[in-house]
Amino acid sequence: MAPVSSKIGIIGAGVSGLAAAKQLAHHNPLVFEASDSIGGVWRHCSYSSTKLQSLRCDYEFSDFPWPDRDSTSFPSYTEILEYLTSYANHFDVLKFVRFNSKVVEIRFVGDREATDLTGKPGDYPTILPGHPVWEVAVQTNHSDTIEWYAFEFLVVCIGKYGDVPKIPEFPRNKGPEIFQGKVLHTIDYCKLQKEETSQLLKGKKVAVIGFKKSAIDLALECADENQGPEGQPCTMVVRTLHWTVPHYWIWGLPFHMFYSTRSSQFLHEKPNQSFLRTLLCLLLSPMRRGASKFIESYLLWKLPLQKYGLKPDHPFEEDYASCQMAIMPENFFSEADKGKILFKRASNWWFSKEGIEFDDDTKLEADVVVLATGYDGKKKLKAILPEPFRTLLEYPSGIMPLYRGTIHPLVPNMAFVGYLESVSNLHTSELRSIWLARLVDEKFKLPSVEKMIEQTTKEMAVTKKTTRFYKRHCISTFSINHSDEICEEMGWNSWRKKNWISEAFSPYGSQDYV
Image 1 (tube, rainbow, N blue to C red):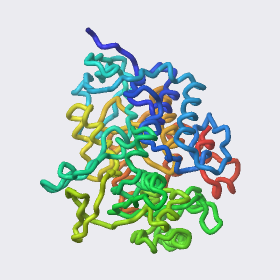
Image 2: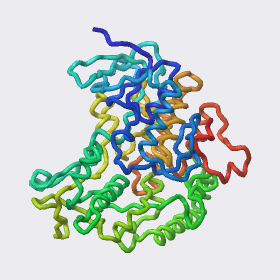
Image 3: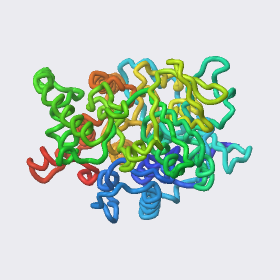
Image 4: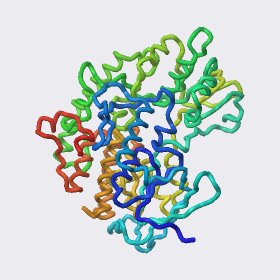
């Protein structure tokens, strides 16, 4: 039976998949979503307490503002799902989505001779060549039946989070199998109902491995379940510290003043800058370090980081530049003060029968161990991509080299949306979906493969110089410049504000790209 043929296929109906489907709607794309609902990580990787890390006005589509966009509260994950559902209904995107349709394999059926995998000078293939380039195997409704579809162009929006947990490796006979208690990853915790999470945590000695947003939220949920004299403390096992912020104000100044305006980003290095601009960045580096120190001084005053041994050794700027900054829930440290949340710094640890052992010869008794150790998005991609394209994901820097955060120069007729990080990933995905739609419609052409590789290499070099946590494709310190280049490539004016004062000193967001 011949595959069902269509022009464009989209894998995933999370935030990025919805943005891509809306911008490519005039091509009637087919969107495959493995689950029974839209929302991606907001649907499948959220706790009851999970909230957005930014304000509503910083996390909205350019043509679909939040109804209460000026509210200063952080919306819950249920509010975000309602917003995404309203967006999908408003623009009639759901008609493209096939739910309970899991992509299990992708085959390349294009012209191999015309596909250059060496990075030598050459042109990227025609976006819509008029014949299938990829075949996609889809498993529907968890059945054994596989249906095949053929596409001229494929947009991958399965993201870096969810589905595949990142599990630490342990020495022989020191893994979860010898632990007498219960071990689960945060992805398993997210699947539990409220009553089940309460039963799991209440009165139990819980160890949470990690100190990022999911770990912090989980430790707070554990503390809430263990109020009263009978309640047990939750211990966070912390390997790498990162800066956390209580809100978006620093000593009475709005946070965006420091990193999200054109003038503030002028202090930071960016790709494609001239020698004089590089020299100026060097001369302005004391101001850049001063801004970081200024923020750190507020955080150390506002939060008891030193009291609990949670002050990172690296500058705040490095966490911001690698998209590692997290918002600390308001009552987190009050629970720590009550002894409901404890902290254990450890470089290495492993399981024992009773709990966890550390490399400093200390032990921690536990009934439950939750691994808040992240997700392996690369593994998800490698599971479905064929060779030789799968090998192209083994990039030494840890970052997948995507031109404009979207096109891999050596993977033909395929785009990746949602793999580039910034302060607002929704805005980042939407703008690149707009760019992608104009590319598909031949409103502009891509540069040569060699030029695209050169551009992505420059971006990775900037990130590597800015932060030790460079193995994340994060553009937060040069996001406006990145958007400028995208606008110029699309034929738009890169300066989006009404006057030069706003251009220099007001933050950029999705509403600037209407």
